[in-house]
Length: 375
Length: 91
Image (spheres, rainbow over the protein chains, first blue to last red):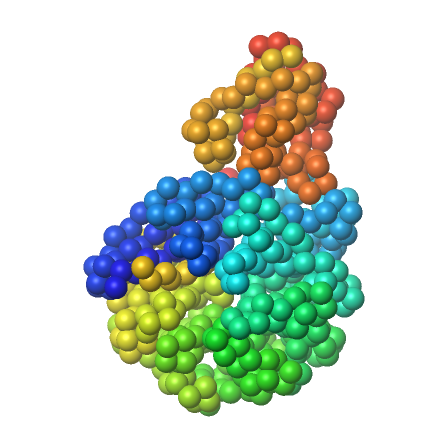
């Protein structure tokens, strides 16, 4: 069955397409725009989020993956929303005019796009959640999340204060989750009106961080059809929840455990991806937060089939490589295909749930997002 | 005043690929606002949430580089050309 990947980079998106999963064609679109996320709605339209420190955030849409048209709307905060000073400091390298000093809150990146229940959801930086009910033609802020009572305690991660993970229950549109670096994971059961931190059992990013909203979640995966079973890659370890995030427990049997910069020992990485057909889950561990490359230079994907024990899958993956895989740069096509892109611009594909890998593209810029779409 | 605004290559998709577009206004900021009012996609790129011209945009006009914050006070004349560019970074 034909498969297409939207591979986002800081200079545009590579559209990788294959009819048989073996031979791939490549087109480079949205040239000049950092492409940070993509999604496909239930009517087959693809969306891609772009951002620029000069010209802001926007969305493109395409019905054929060839012609991309910019939409006339994008997530934007209200003029009166106040921003996080520490986030401003992190993103202000390009603030030549010094306007961030005004204290406003700005959408500087769309980290993730999700299509569910006929809506589009965007998780953004400075951390927030937006929803579109008309295929991206207009966007509403989800105030219950964006103005959460704990917001003043949220501390930005290394890349700023970003809402990079949004999950929606496939059976209950009122139930959704958002992950924020480094304020942790939140759940709403009432359509976004109210939100509760869901970090019980997860180590805070640093010992001094708030116990309830000080977690540095890196990515979370689930099957929307069985939404309450969640798998979580955290700065400090890999976790699982069977009750919608109310409780978490560490699952690192078989994963490489490494010493972090502060001495804590756990499995460190960024992406967390699930193949819904088999319920297999995939991570790409790195050798801690100091080194941030695969241990010993062997690029390895780890898979769990039972949600408890992990095993390394290295067939076809290079040794002596010192790159990384970013949180949004891995995807499953939900039929056994798994795909990821590296920070050094290579794309790998597996048609057999990670057993074997094939390099299908190289020479791209740093890869920040990968999504896979079956025809 | 009727002026010509030259768009940077990354924004020309909002004008069907055109390098320049016509605008009306007595200042650079007014001409940009005129364009934004007629083109929602372009408006996203010109103005931030507070309604200000985005901080890294720089205009080239009459031999001068005009920062975003100064665009409202920079008068233009009929037939002027305004080049939209951005602050340079890197080296």
